[in-house]
Length: 191
Image (cartoon, rainbow, N blue to C red; front, side, top):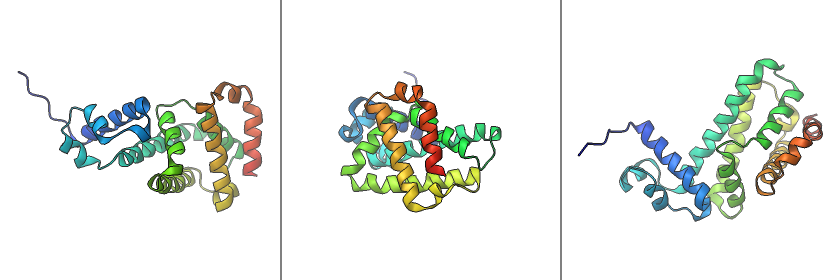
C-alpha cells in the first residue's frame, strides 16, 4: 500500500476550495453543507475544519479569488488605455458582466442567497468595498460613480442585475449582441 503524499497548507486550502466550488455548482450554495464539501476532499473532517468553519467562509475565499481573477484581467490590459479612461472602465465592467469564468456561477448563487442571509449581506458589502479599493489601486483616480457612495451602490446593483440576467435569464448572447449600447449606458453612469 502506497502512502499518500502530504499536501502543503496551500494545497489543502486549494483542494477544499475546489471541492466547495464543485459542490456549490452541483447542489447550490444554500443546499451545501460542510459534510458535502468534506466528502469531495481527501482530507479528514478535522483537516477541513482547521481551514474553514463554514460554507460561508469557503464562499468568502472563492469570492476573493473572483475579485483577484477580474483584477488580473484589468492589470493585463491596463497598458492599452489611459488610466482615467471612462472607455476603459466601461469596457472592463461590460467584460465582467458577460464573462463566463469559473467563479460566475458561484457569484450568482451568492447574489441570490445574500438577501436571506445577513452574513452574506455583510460579505457583499465587504467585497464591494474591496473591489473598489482594488480598482483605485490599479487606476488611481476613479469617476464619481465609484467615489460617491450612492452612485457606487447604483453601479454595483446595475452591474449585478446584468450579471444575474446573463446567468439566470440566459441573456449573455443578447448582451454581446448589444455591447455598444450597454457600454454607452455604462459610460453615461460614469460621467
